[in-house]
Length: 170
Image 1: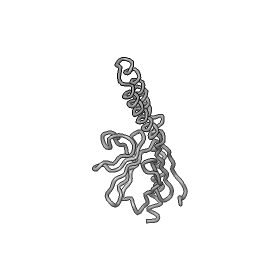
Image 2: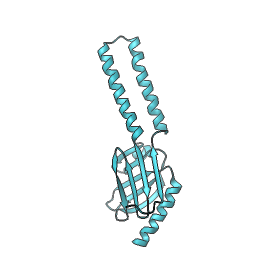
Image 3: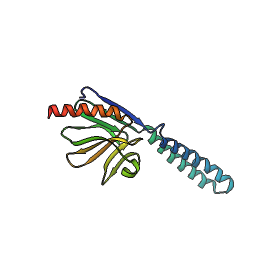
Image 4: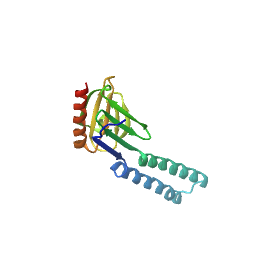
């Protein structure tokens, strides 16, 4: 059960530069299929199959990006997160899990290979949508987790309260 909530954030890919690149690419590719068919006669069955595959693929990717949201909540004792469809059930980190934590600036592409839900051998797991600020956790089992945020000042305040509670209860 959650205690007093100090921070809540819901992040979505919709409205980010990644969203616009995805939509632009989709329009270009799906528009190119019928234009190419006009200039180069092909078997209509092959063209239809190619179009259907393209539409289904791009529709699936757009649906994935449109429905993916990163939920982060910090209360008196825990950091909660979920990132459907990758992490659909809410999970949390408590004092028993965390060795170190700090809000930090990071390089999404260089450190993690981009945005979304990613696993990297050296830098650990990341859940981010946009930007370059996140909560870096080093867990007691040695694993690293970074949770991106678009509200670093509010998160910093919540993390300070959480750390104070952990010191009082530790």
